[in-house]
Each structure stands twice: as structure tokens, then as C-alpha cells.
Image (cartoon, rainbow, N blue to C red; front, side, top):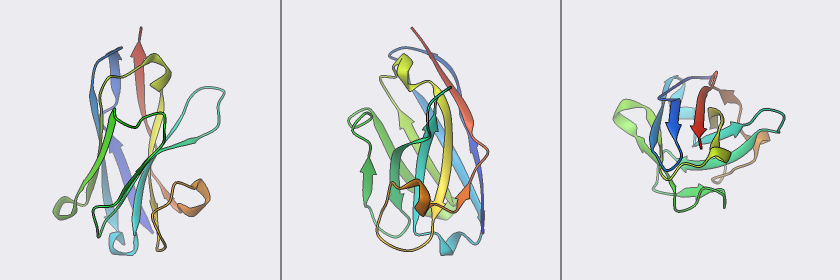
Amino acid sequence: QVQLAESGGGLVQAGGSLRLSCAASGRTFSSNTMGWFRQAPGKEREFVAAIRWSAVSVYYADSVKGRFTISRDIAKNTVYLQMNSLKPEDTAVYYCAAAPGGPITGRIADFDSWGPGTQVTVSS
């Protein structure tokens, strides 16, 4: 199992930027894909972005393409989500997750380790 801890959330005005971090510990070598998801109040959890540890392969939800960038630092076992041009509809709790094996994925069911989440609030 992989232990995950997010940080970097907060309150920002529309058009602003935030960078989320996800520190991974434990059996990190067993995780092939790292992902970011978000859940707004009253809505289902949704996929945001994913990246493979071993290769520069990334995958984004259409709603964040061109605004968000996912990256990873293997030496630090950390995954980042740079969020630019934020909109009020980006307001949500953001979760980091790890998926073992297989191709890069955005399916929630493929991820078996989750962090506790970090709140991102974008004011209009």
C-alpha cells in the first residue's frame, strides 16, 4: 500500500494559480500511475489528471486541459498539480491517488490508494 499526503490547497481568486503537492511513501515502487481527482459539494468525484512514474506519459480531463499541468519528481516521490487560470467551478476537494500496474488511467476504480484531500476554493 502507498501512503499519500496532499498539500498546497487554499483560497485563490479566479484567474489565479495554485500548486498542489502529493508526497508518496511506503510501497511507492508498486504504483505505476499517479492521479489527481476532485470532488465538489454535492457532486461525484471526478478525474483531473494522471501521470506514470516511469515515463513522461500524462492524461488530462478535458475540463482542465491547457490550464493544469501534472508532473512528478521521482527522487522526492512527489507528484505535483500546477493549476493556472483557475475558475470558480474548479472549487473542490482535490485528492491524490495511486494505481498499481496497467496503462495510464483515469478510472477511479483503478486507483487503490488515496490521500485525505486538500481543499481548493476559487472565488469569483
